[in-house]
Length: 254
Length: 254
Image 1: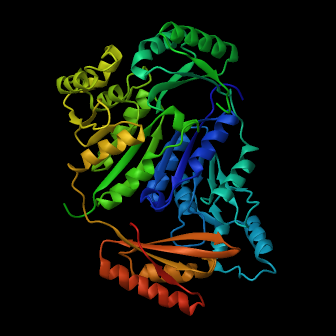
Image 2: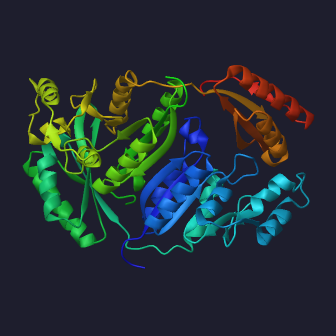
């Protein structure tokens, strides 16, 4: 697929909204989406509330190519994501036979019983496909363009890497970063002028204050490497004319 | 104010969505809202896109008592939050005389010129009030129930603490945490039974895996301390009957 492919992430959990738990899934999904040519266009954090989850899922699945949810798929009463996603799609919750088989194999021979609470982790919206969980037994699910994943970061990441194999990314955004030792307000007009000349390059300005000195990291993002190089060169020239010492930084990602 | 007071946080910035920058404002706002009796009910991360920002602001301000936005209020071309919020309210962007006065005082006698880019930080949606910025010169703004704040955490936090003085919190949620050395699937039915008996207490289950042992932190939240204590006692008794060693933890927050 070429062109722009977008995704939304829906983080489900009262514990994130209360400040008790810090979310670690957003940075991971954001970075990996960028790497596979998917633009994470929107993130929502919603409570353990079926209406809130269903509303977010329906808004996001209509607006984006892919939707990822994290959290709320465990064995306890507050794990309501599957029911809420089923409601969003207007389908029933069914017990998935393959998921039951996987859970049975996972718990077989161990100390823990595959009781009704654990079997609940085999429930899925009708019509959903399984998302592998190589870490623990309980799978995630995909229904249409919505991937329902665990909240525990190690499990979420393993599920995401499985989901990625099915995802068709689009044009990958590449980046250049130009650091300059001038304050943001001083370079603003110059940045705007370069942005105007390179409308196909997205220019972001991220100020910092370090060792008692103001500076800015200017991030240029776009799909065309040649245009990025040209825009970065134009920017460096213009910033040098302003009296700064601009420097292109090594890129680790986009 | 008593009863339930809710808020939404809108985090604005491409750099969060690309994974380049990690947001630090959500944990702060979440924790402080809990402390002042405001329930952070929803968080959205949106791109530097005027339509996306305006849509999020309009959805959130209709649904919640308070809305906080972070990011996009600096001097550069990619700082479009004020314009987007003005669009959401259907008002013009105007240059705020008091904000100009503050910026003038801030830059006076320094090395930096109060140029047009920096003056842009005095622009506000028509009808907005100033939110103090004790860290640097440029203020935030409040229009109706929407607080427009900086993205840089130190500045955001200072602005938030100013905004808090105007905010009327509701019933504060208190919490009890019961830790138990049993896996989540083993205690799920017990949790559900206690939840059913204490419908006014919100019971969340947060599993952990440490030193090769499964365990769960069960968080009970509610406004009535006596009911919380009763629910926690009932839970501890039931978990002990299951063969666990449940223990009430010290609370640091809710």
